[in-house]
Image (cartoon, rainbow, N blue to C red; front, side):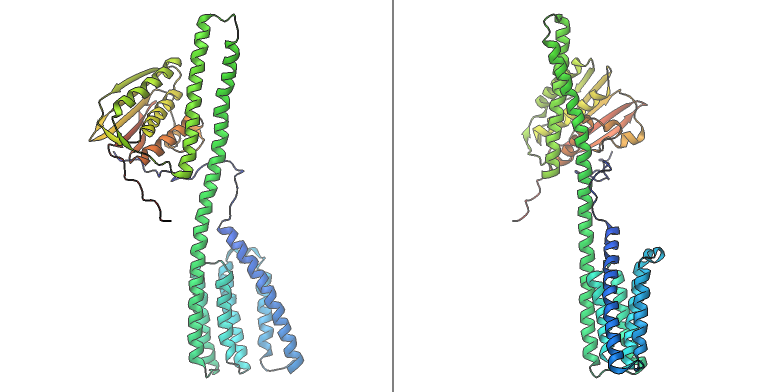
Amino acid sequence: MKPASHSVLGGRTLGGSSHATRFPSRLDDDQESLGVLRLGCGFALGFVVIYLVWLIASRGFYTAGIGYVWLALGELTVFLACMWWGPILRIWRIWTLCFGVLLVVTFSLFGAAENDSALPFVSSLLCSLATAAYVAWGWRWQLAMNAASLTSFVAVPWLTDNVSHNRASQFLGLLIALAFAQSGAYFLDRYRQRIRRQLVALEEAARFREAQMATMVHDVRSPLAALHGYGSLLESDDMPLGERSEVLARLSSTLWSIDLVISNLLDLYQAQVHNLLASPTELDPNPLMANVVENCAKQAERRSIALKCELAKLPRCRQDPRHLERIVRNLLGFSMGRVDSGTVQIKCGENYGRIAIEVIDDGPPLSESELSALLSPEPNGATSRAVGLGLYIARVMTESAGGWLEVRRVGPERIALVVELPTEAPAAAPEPAA
């Protein structure tokens, strides 16, 4: 029998309200990149138009190579126009890469026509640096852009016989710049992924707290309303003694439930903020188990539930006594909450040097989905009440003590909650250095 594979504080997608805060996603990164590309392309169009007007004014309309500037202007216009077209938006990374390569080649050819050997270097450099700095498209696409820029820088001047005397220094400078561009794109991509994971965790925590607060408000408000009603009944002077004793029993039962709910709420806060750290001490668990079971037996008697106990002698252990008490109380509280007038059975003993606790009830049958969700803090199915949160807290405390909590089906209706704890608590994690 293997421990349940759950992390201490989650390990699954938490359900919650549809009104939870929405955090940025990868789609938001795409939209931001598209906005930057549109804005940058708009500026580039303006500069090319100004450059074209200057060329025409200073050199004439038919200056050699001016057609390449017209070609670049057309490429920019087509690129910008298509950045609002649905089919292109689905492949915007491929579209951007192709456009970048085409623009670099165009200005390299323009440099050859003008006998300007610096233009291939500048165009290859600027396009790659711009995408690395502003476009959130990932390091792989940036690597493709850098490779295309480097290939264009090498091939176009060689094909057009427009080789600069400073070719070696330009090539070395371009390699260094592209290396910085690639490392920057890689760093930004990893940073975005880390931020996105943190935001997803915050979103799950927000959903969890919203859902649990809604559930807990109901779980606390209902017993408080019952207490108010019992108090009003006890104020009546003509109430028979037998009915008064019954009301007092129900009042005590309600107070017991409220105490459990509030204790679990406090532990839930500790679990989220401080990871619910245990404080193990050397103890004899037998008196503690007896006291907890006796306390729960009174609650079972008030609710007309038969609580059967089989408490074998347990070995001495090093555990947090408060956590051990809360684990057992939450297990019994959940099982007693599932039955109206049935039977709850608790067994404990030693199992291969470990403390084994098993709680069985004959409550209503649960579906497979409800059974698998019992140890989750999700407010669905059988976990929609405070006892569901109690099971989650019991699981967190059990795992923090180095043990595990498992739910089993016993027959068609009965379920068993099984806990195993080591006699030695796990070593505490070292405190992070200041």
